[in-house]
Image (cartoon, rainbow, N blue to C red):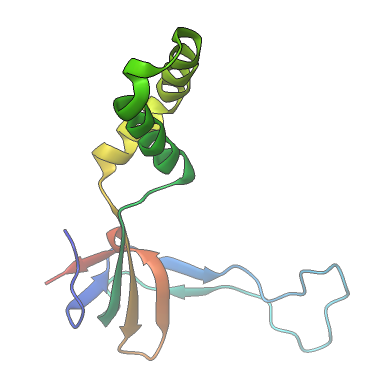
Length: 130
């Protein structure tokens, strides 16, 4: 499922946005500081403002594509040892490439919820659409 800009969505599960608002630098907590969590409940509805599809994948996926292209283009003219090393590098990246192919492109979205909260850069799988 790929969400579309302007589409209505709802959270598929509870989402924890903040685990704690205490200082992270090790300094003492100032008096009156807030401690707690901020969660959005499953079913919270909102509107998709932006959809970003990352077809390039991770660094390993891009490296796999680069190396296989190199092998396809120049493999027949490479010295035997260089070609063997290149094939080993490709084989090492094969599991990451296979996982990328099975998963498909990484799609993240920005959603403005009806309650005013905005989630940005989250995976589309966190939402269901009507």
